[in-house]
Amino acid sequence: MRNAWLLLALGGLGLGARDSGIPNPEPQAPNPRVDVVPNDAQHRVDVLVDGKPFTSYIYPTTLKKPTLYPVRSASGVVVTRGWPLEPRPGERVDHPHQVGLWFDHGDVNGLDFWNNSDAIPAARAAKMGTILHRAVRRAEGGPGEGVLEVTAEWVDYQGKPLLREDTRFVFRAADGLRTIDRITTLTALGQPVTFVDNKEGLIGMRVARALEQPSTTPEVFTDAGGHTTTVPMLNNDGVTGRYRSSEGLVGDSVWGTRGRWTMLSGLVAGEPITLAILDHPKNPGFPTYWHARGYGLFAANPLGQKAFTNGKEALNFRLAPQEATTFRYRILILSRSATPEQIETYYRDFTR
Image (tube, rainbow, N blue to C red):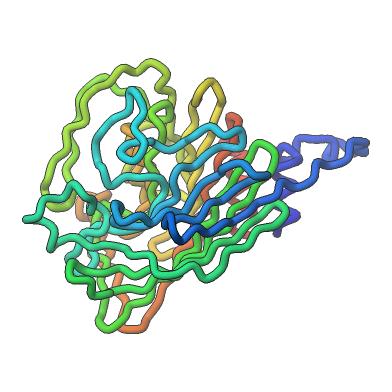
């Protein structure tokens, strides 16, 4: 599997000398070194490629869930939004819970894990859930690949755990490419757990301003509790993002549709960037619905079918006590433009 992935990355997706039948006289570049470095005192685990930052798994007390932040391309370009942790000029300042690359849900036994943040007023706090990091079980680096395994708990307002989360991250690096696999197993603890059908989920990232889709009008968004956020129109200079799904839909039409994967392409600091989130056939609710918004929220949600179909479908996913389920995703960060056919090649490698 690793060799197949490296052939994709280093061979330009099958377009090089190997397929032409001409021997390649150039020696292959050595695999970059991926290091995974825990720092308990700073509530983070840093992921480095040849000593340079790729991303960090962070769990500060100011956040209501662990997240990967920031996420960088192979050249070091940051592809995630900075606000609210590290504001940058020209960014939107909405949805303070959308930080980095995360995994949670908007209604778990009536608790909202998705929208929770320090900005939640005290009157709503009892309705919110928090994901608490508990342990780093494994942190291991190596050539081309590093692994991080962590345990967390999904708790209510009083700290009572509903779910145990065991997540395995696999970070890979090659020339012009970074990937993140997130394999998350959720286990219900002392009571049944229902993921109530809700559009706010499941794996999501908030992208840099340059990867948003250009917008010419202010927009108002409403969460599952009916609370609204106004997203004003901003200067669109340098805003170049464009969604495309595995089903051939583009732009805003991707939202609320099913697909095996969705890609987001644009220019960041003059560099062509393609992001993609790949769903796995073994995931509940496959193929996922896409909660992909032009303002920079890029999320896959297999557990919000009612919201995306105007009530024609519904999935209230339930776990009995001690029952577990696993979700598998791959995130691609390519330092180039990519075609749907190329993303499909990566997808076949992921699901092989």
